[in-house]
Length: 293
Ligand SMILES: [Zn+2]
Image (cartoon, rainbow, N blue to C red; front, side):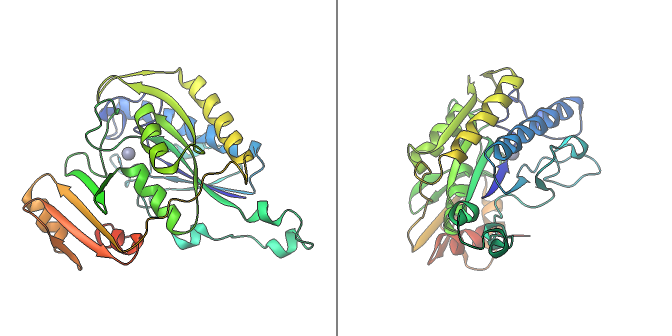
């Protein structure tokens, strides 16, 4: 079983201000510690459920003097037994990550247990809700200043939905989410009741929350993810597959931002502040707006 943990920081327990999510100040160091503790808890949950391979990707841009984006975890505090991806752009869950990387023929010569061995799933950690969610802590979609919202085939979608659709394009389900209550609710609406959710806090507006003690949140994440993985195969939700053709529209904050995005191939202006991309399938349309590095 191969579990990919896609992490973000805004939905981590104890986080409620941008100062905790980047910049190199003392509050950012506090945020990094909390985020690192939660990814460690998620890894322990995977190992407890006997996942064969665990890869955690830091999906929070953030950044600090001397560091690049997506480098928030404190490396020497990371849990053993997993691999970690840092400095790699958000949302670029690729073909190689969806593949079984190990030699299954040697592991299961008679095929016994092969289904479980080959199974793949995604867990979202520290997730936040889409831009404009009233009770969503630090809610935003992709870019808190520059992007006002995204629709896919006319339906509004946030980062958790985009990640679920990206994994779904590879046939991989999202089985677990932790974050604030609004993010959990948002993804459950897209994935269905089979999704395991661990809400570590409830938004009291964009910059305030009522949250668990971080140690309690870590325990809930570990237990929740282990239980979700253990539900294989019957209790796992289906992958989120968006039928083509697909039109993705992004509402930007200002016309100059729209013009910059529309200068990319196959992206057109659809209004003064909106751009639109089309594709036969989700990844094709999304890739026109959001390109892997
Ligand atoms: Zn983030």
